Length: 112
Image (cartoon, rainbow, N blue to C red; front, side, top):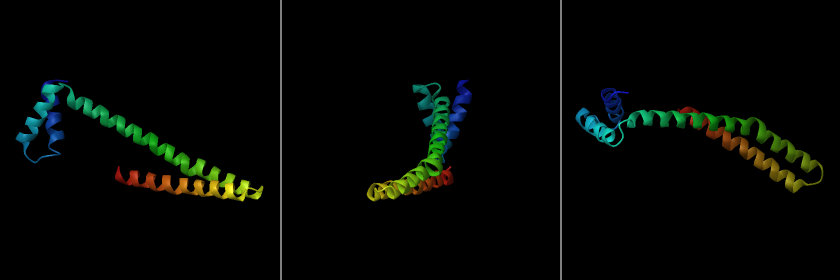
């Protein structure tokens, strides 16, 4: 990518932090003096973070719809087989897993 296009990208990014285009350009030039592809790297890094969020969200759904319910069912089975304390604990942990991961999934979904 050319310096001019990298600078234009940098000014656009820095305008998120200031309303003065001169300051934004100065900050962008400072970044580009240190790393000529600073803003290209920034875009790649943000894309990677988004991919990590998507993967994390999938794991949360797995916890909500598979792991948590299996823990609750296992707790119920343990309680019926003569281990009410362990069965109750497993059921509580399963329920907590469902609620905790479900709430976090919704919170992140709404934020993105």
